[in-house]
Image 1 (cartoon, rainbow, N blue to C red):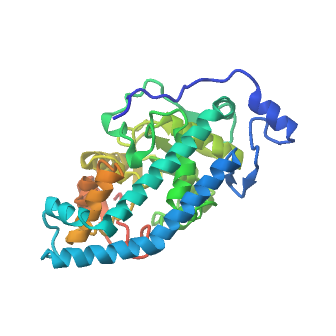
Image 2 (image 1 turned 180 degrees about the vertical axis):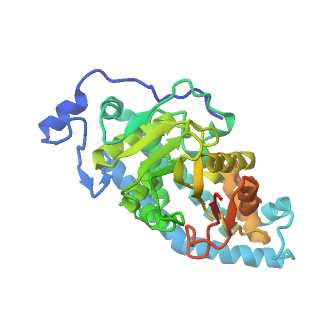
Amino acid sequence: MINRRNLFAGTMATASTAATLSKAMGKEAPFDWQPRGTIGVFERLPSLNVESELDFITGYRAWMGRSLAKQAHARSLDVLKRAGVNMNKDGNINDLVRILTEDQTVSMMVHNIERSQEQFWKLVKQECDRNAEVLLEEMAAAEKLGPGTLQLNADLDIPDYACYEIHIQPGGYVGDRFAGHIYFYGTATVLMGGNGQDQLQRAWVRGVPRPADGKVKRILDQGTSCGQFAHALKDKFPEAEVWADDVGGPMLRFAHMNSVKLGKEIHYVQQLSEMTQFPDNHFDIVTSNLLIHEVPATKIDEIAKEAHRILRPGGVYYPLDSYSGDQPRGTALAHYNAWRNYRWNHEVWWMEYYGYDHAKGMRDAGFKVDENGPKGRTDTTKNVIGYKV
């Protein structure tokens, strides 16, 4: 676990490095350093060498996802069946790990996924550290600008559960001054090149429903990380005031800077999603994207209760995650894959998430629950929706 102290303050560069470079290159925004330009909404990395290395890893992971993963999946089923495992039950996880770890195809798949992940995180972090002065000044300059606002909280008591290096990201969300940059560029590789223009966030936000009366004045995006989902929410509900929170100050500094560059009016707040600063009955929609699997199950409950408190009657709660409506429980291979994600991808709360009953948790928080909501993050899953009555 990493140091609990938030490092968002970091080192504030005093020289006008970014402004000088931007002015010399004819940039409109004086704080916006784009040495290699942008592709749509995606700002390219400063170094061609690093970009090329990331492109290679992205292509390699795409090949694994299309080819090697299918072979490893078929091999896993075959190995487990030949070992006499009942495929329709979770089974003993120690036995499943022992059986599948001994298979070379399965082990090679796991090894390649995790080693490539470690490598791209390392590449992005090193590139950020090499350009630290300019990047820090960019974020500092953007804090004074809009549209939108940024509220950082240097006194926030970061809970232990938020201090892990989830999915092996160096420093996690709170322990590196460039956590937002690292996450933004790293996840572009995780998603195998398929999200260069935030197209996944725009696709996922389509499922976020309006309240029955159609009125949407305020929205909260819980655990916003880099703000990409908040951007998609603003595009879908342009009439709404969009707020976004996160525990990580470095994540929010990057998110706000990116929103300013893109002209998106988002209001960012550093706080815990289970303990917000907002009044009762304040929002029409509270949503999240890939938050709830990264907190303990007790915190999922608390986040839902807080969402219920700050939603107005008739408001909608829509926590979007990997399988927040259809948990793949009850098969041996699903059980092993959940453990693999927990153990090797450092998703420290994944086993709790694997066994969590989302519909029950939302009902316990006071919501009327629709278990047959729109599809989730894949075509084969759906999302549960909570309505405050």
